[in-house]
Amino acid sequence: MKRNCKLSRLALGLTLAISGAACVTEPTSNSNSEIGRATPSPLASPTVAATTEVTGVPVTLPVLDAFFASDEAFTPELKTRLSLTDDQIAQLRAVAREETSKLRETENGDYGGTTAEARELAASRMKEIVGADKGSQLAAFVSERWRAGGDDLDAKNEKTSTESVATSPNAVPTDSRIVVNAPAYRMDVFEGGRLIKSYKVGIGYPEFPLPTGLRKAKAIIFNPTWTPPDEPWVESPSSKVKVGEKVEAGSKLNPLGLLKIPIGSPSLIHGGKTLAKLGTFSSHGCVGLTDALVQDFAKVLAQLANQKLSDADIANYKKNRSETKQVTLSNPVPVELRYETIVAEDGKLHLYRDVYGRLTNTEENLRAVLEANGVKLEDLTEEERSQTLEALEEMSRDPKGKLAQGPMASTGASTASTASPSASPVSSPKAVVQKSARITRNFKGKKEIVINIAA
Image 1: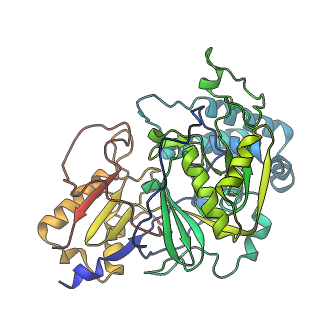
Image 2: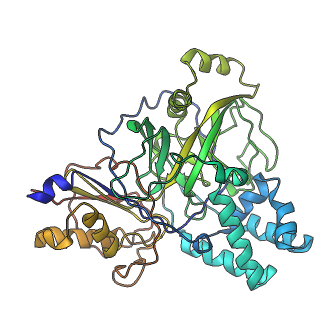
């Protein structure tokens, strides 16, 4: 049938919000032996995108806390741009820090927090402290600053035509760039428009969501220092580090591992993760990799920047772990952070969990994916339609098992779409869609449903 070939290359990115936070990781082994190189995906899938209103993005208290902690210009600008008083700023700092300190990560991966709840709490607290008008202005200011990567605000108008988010159907990157799709827990590397490598990654917690938008990787920092956050696991009696006390580069207590790559304040791409943490919520607004993978990625990143970073170079940095060194990239590499929950490729639909509750798994958006590829939902068989709509509903549930919007979020919430560069790996040869009333408090069981829609 006609739709068989048309469905071979299609993807829809559906981004409703721009958010993020400073990254904090739990101490883990720095062993490089747990995993080798990632296997590149054989085919990059085109995309569909649209625009978004900055004022509509969620801002959480941990996000606010991240800017207070990592952005030196943030507090002064709250005074000059929003006319906030010292007392108001002190109160905002306190409530943001308190909420961040409540974050918990269980050993079994059970995680019940949602971005929507965190956003509502932040709006309420900010309104109490600075008033409704200033609270809205503060949320918009934080959103814009985060979208631009904080310190990249002044440079946002200097981007070339190739350094932009895809906005047309069937578009894939034509330049060299990194593209991260949070719901798929995936990071893709493009060189000259060709997909050369993919990595499975950890992403930010719902209260610390990975932001969206275009960033730049300008440097690779070897042997970074680390300052422990005010977190329960840091404050526990068994902890060997103290809150606010800088952990030196190379220390076994430093969870960042050998290197980190800033991608615009306050987010990073870094190592320090165990293999089990990939494909999970495992960071504060950052992209997490194992130490072995982040070293491999650093070499690929340098290659995109037309610089050489060899195994011997990395070995030399390892020899002197107490000394922090920065490798500045002469050609900064674009890093595009996207949010995609519906992907069609090779006669299959990949439906990803709406991990940050952006209401992207809707029938309207599903139709947009299919129609962008010349196929209508009605073209599917009755069985295919039934499976697809059931799966769409299942993947619209939050960690507490609640649907994002009514019995089926098909009314099409105000969406903004960004693209994913490729369909993410299939989790199993053939997924079976099942109805279930089970309350799922984590995303470990079903993060992706794959449905065959072509004979």
